[in-house]
Length: 244
Length: 244
DNA sequence: TCCGATGGTTTTGGATCCAAGACAAGCGGA
DNA sequence: TCCGCTTGTCTTGGATCCAAAACCATCGGA
Image (tube, rainbow over all chains, first blue to last red; front, side, top):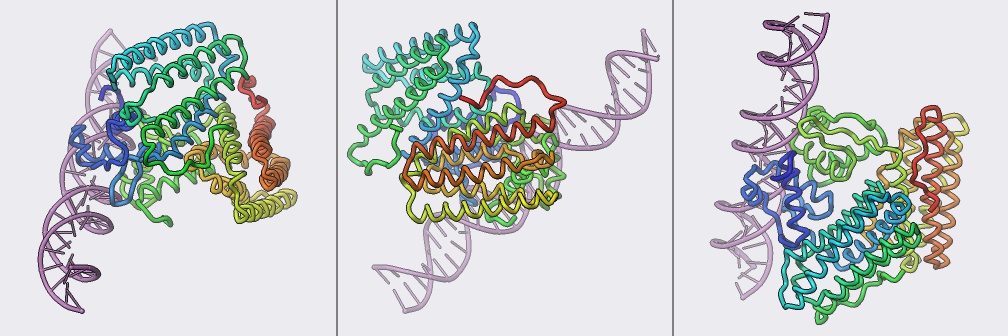
């Protein structure tokens, strides 16, 4: 809609956002006609958009039955963080010797913006209010920090794949649990600082392990939160492990 | 065609194969009408298939101008191997403690099949003959070996992403150079054996580093080959490096 | 009462049709 | 002669139309 290009692309983008933020809950079936009237277009571009989302793994096609927003299993969430841990750490390592002073300044800005978002969110949380929009902005600020690193690393393919893994982090389902996310927020903030300092110190290996641990610990925290919320209906722990 | 499901899926699969093997050379523009009569269908499923390929990164859409088979730059090839190195090593590490004796047997079979394919190919090569079909089978045998590992690891997301990276290895362009690929063939063979032995010995870390080195060395060899072939028209070496 | 067959309804997958954007050649004015 | 406009053709993007597969409820028989 806002973006130029074909309608199929616009719709794909819009749906992607809606799915990732949880606006369209996992497990939903997407009716082509419904979407076509929602976006004021015919079914043709809708179907092309759905094909794209299917290729990205966000929805699954069931031939002659419709498309369904993929319900990501616990194991897949864990996998997504494992993948991100590998790819982000790789990108960070590559970026470290390539960062110009302008890049470093941008990184500092992104870190600051993220800190601000974090602070705002924590305050809001302590005030008892939960604001989904604020959580989204926090997530975007979080991504923006890493995007500076990707831009400097100049590794489009790695970036594309890492972002694909990133998409599996559904905001709303987690957010909707109402769990206490302070630790997640603050830890992310601290880790960003540490990563930036390692990069500034031109330590590719240091930045690498920090980036890796950053992603893995986020994953662990997120899972712990999900555990706590749904502790009554848990299946036995999976054999996949974060700890190497 | 052979596969069940929708035509769009069949076409996407067929085109993917054709692109990856180089049957359709990089840089080609794909005319929808041409494809539709080639596959004996209308343009509709063709377009959906193209959307999928675009999402996979195999082709690029240029709005109102057509789709073009992506010309993968040297850096992207290198990136693809870096990604595969991380993901395959991760999957191998995860798989190692999970491999049942049946899995190990399957792995041994796959190794043997790959050895056979390698031997056949080397003999053919020494006889001065170059057989593209044989090279494809070799590649498939190669993939089959790793697929056993993925199956045991049971990490669908990692598998999917690693395979996406795998697709960027274009057979024909490399093959068509007529370069001496013996070293590549043999080294792969040796490394598969080493990886299997590490898995059998239940050494996740050992298997991991071997898998990583396996992929990276393949990448290095491939690049060296491309270098040798096109040594007259080379640009200065990229700043991306395989060696950590 | 329960199970399977049968018909209508819904929704998808695919074909065809139409409009709009891009390329190319020819025309006209400076 | 050269540059810009125009017009015609080609190709894509999107809309509409049609057939086939899947769902759903009802009905009939055991």
